[in-house]
Length: 211
Image (tube, rainbow, N blue to C red; front, side, top):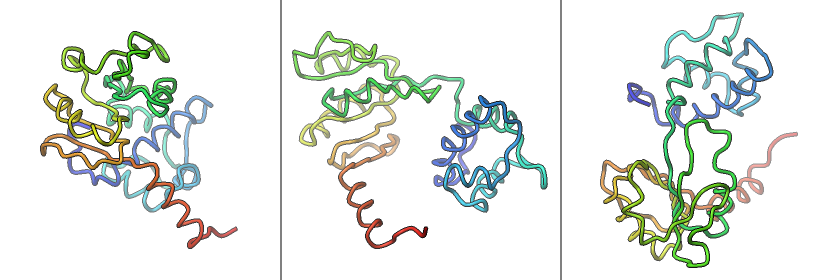
C-alpha cells in the first residue's frame, strides 16, 4: 500500500475484509452501505470502521452512508488490486495442495504462480493449474515472484527461508511451527494453525458469546 505508511497496522489488516464485502455488494447491484451494515458483515464495530475510514479522508456522508462503487474503487487502489502479486508455494503436502486448489480465487491481486517440493513423485505435476518444480530449482525459478507461502516441515523452514530471501522474496506467509529469522526488510506473517485452534477452544470455553 504505497503512500499509506501512516495507517496503523491493525487498520491495514482490516482493509481486505472491507474490500471483499464491498465487492460482494457491488456484484449484487447495491449502491450504498451504512457503517452498521459493514459492521454486521465483517464483525468489526461501527466506531472502529469509521475510525479506519477516517485515515483516508471523508469517505461517507452522515445520514447517507458510504457509496459502494466509490469505496470499492478507493480500496482497490489502496490495496493495489489492479496489480497482481506473484506468489510461490514451498511444500506441496496436504496443506500446500489445498492452497494450490484454492489459489486465492477471491483475491484479484494475488496468484500462486509456482510450487516447489522435494518429492520426485510430485515434480512435473500441475495442481490447480500450478506447476510443481523440484526444490533444487528454487533460485532459478523465482525471478518475478515477490512473496512465498511456507508449508514445509519446521526442521527445514529456516534454511528454505534463507534461500527465499537470497532469491529476492520480500514477504513470507509462514504456516510452519518454526519461528523463522529474517532480515529487517523482510516481512513475515506467522500462522500456526494448532495455536489458533487452541485459542479458539479457550475462548469458546471461557468467553461464550451471548445469544
